[in-house]
Structures are given as C-alpha cells and as structure tokens.
Image 1 (cartoon, rainbow, N blue to C red):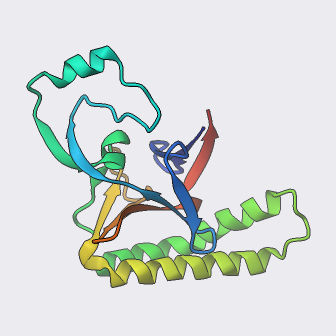
Image 2: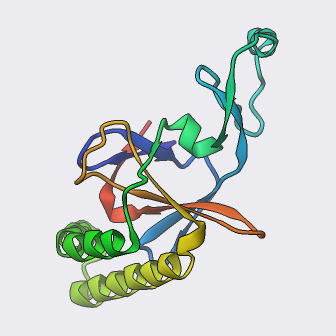
Length: 180
C-alpha cells in the first residue's frame, strides 16, 4: 500500500488502497468518492474488509453524524472555502515552476535514461493545464480541501461532483509516496 503525503505538511492525504486513475498526462490522481453520514470517531470500512462486532455495537450509539465525502472524512481533510477562481489561477501560476522542478527531478532519477526530460516536463505541464481548464469549467461543482495543518503552501485537493460521478483530484507532484 502507498500513502501519499503532502510534501509541505507531511500529512497523509490519500492512499492507493482506494480505486484511482492517473489522468491528465500523469499530472493528476483521481479517486472516486461518495457522500455519506459519518461520526467524528467513525472509520470507513474498505470494500472486502470485515467490520468488527465492536464497530457494529458502536453504530447503535447516539453519536451525531455529519454529511461528508468519505475520503475527506477518512483523511481528516478540511474545506478551504476562501479560494476563488482567481485565487485558484494564482495558486497554479505560482506553483507550476516549483512543481516542474519536482517532476524534472523525478524523471531524471528514473531508471529510463532514454527519456527526453524536457518533453516529459512539457507533457506534464500540458496535463496540468488541461486539469485547470476542467476545474474552471466546473467551478460551480468544485470544492477544495486541505489538511488540518492549514498551510497555505500545502497541497490542495479538488472535489468535482455532478450527476454522473463524485471525484477527488490530487496534483501528483505535490505528494511524497510512502510504501507501507
């Protein structure tokens, strides 16, 4: 299992234990998610996992539950309500140079030495720009999250919901992969 940790805050944001895809020319990880009612002390049971008898007994308690996205609840993400469309564009513009350096180093450190590094970085930037266009065109259905550290320089997580799917998007370059 791989845990994706925010490069800035060190907080866990997501895990490959959840079904996901790599999209937008490798720039973005997308995870299907769902809305549900969750209590503050409630864990999510993964598909195939057996809930314990204790957990079933705990469900009987009169704990107040809140409507949340499962991945937001599981990784204790918090909504970032102050980012506007303009703020999103600025965040992207300010971050792309630094993130490109991270991508370039990852490509250079890969075992495949025949790769055109500059072409791969350009492809990644194109993917990130396509992602930004998708987010902006769906802005009315977008929610943005960050971790409890609340660091302005930390990773942002994007939720896009519509009648066909609920999906969370993570900019891959902003995460360190920890194999568990």
